[in-house]
Image (tube, rainbow, N blue to C red; front, side, top):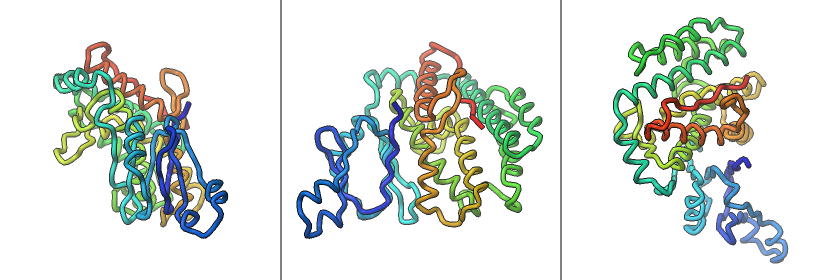
Length: 311
């Protein structure tokens, strides 16, 4: 069953009872109305059905009991800042029964293994970017498909950057001189939000597989608590890009990241990808990728399972 992504953009009281998230509206709870009406206005969601929770309002109240239960069920809890962009991520400290062993094998991974894993990651990312570019923009992606074959262990020739430059130069042809930059013009705002959701999903999968999300195979920023998530999410980024392409093509106003746009982007964890020839929701695929990564660290296999994008 697909885990739900819950978004709260209005004031709310969030609590827990009988393994259910209870949602109450302050304007109802504080109003002089019959208790029967208040009871009917409440909503409850089984916590076991939740994968991601996003809190995007300063007047949301959440109980410690609910937070504890969410983390115990490996739910990624995302908080947003004053600009209503994701700024914080809370994950369980213990996500696997043999976590210490998993940590040790991850920490002891050799540099040659990490370089091979990064090679696989870059190949998968460029392949998905090329597929998306060729399918949606009628652009010759032959150079990118060639770079997939040319990527060496550790990507010393930095084909990832070459592919990214080619991809972003062609993906939004109707936006003059578009550049992918966090503070850049729209649809950078949509990309930022979508990638933040994707990062939370991948980090959740990594913790569930008993690994440290801060210890990457390529990314090494000492200030980044999610280096491994930033590594593993790379081949998944084109899923976000495809959603943003569709939003831009619809002709809606993308200058302001409103609730309708956020709802579309929040559907990303449920988007299907192809894993080993079978369609899987991204949320499920992320767990399979993380599990295969651990098996690489433990020596059981030598290949990470990454998705193919559906266009």
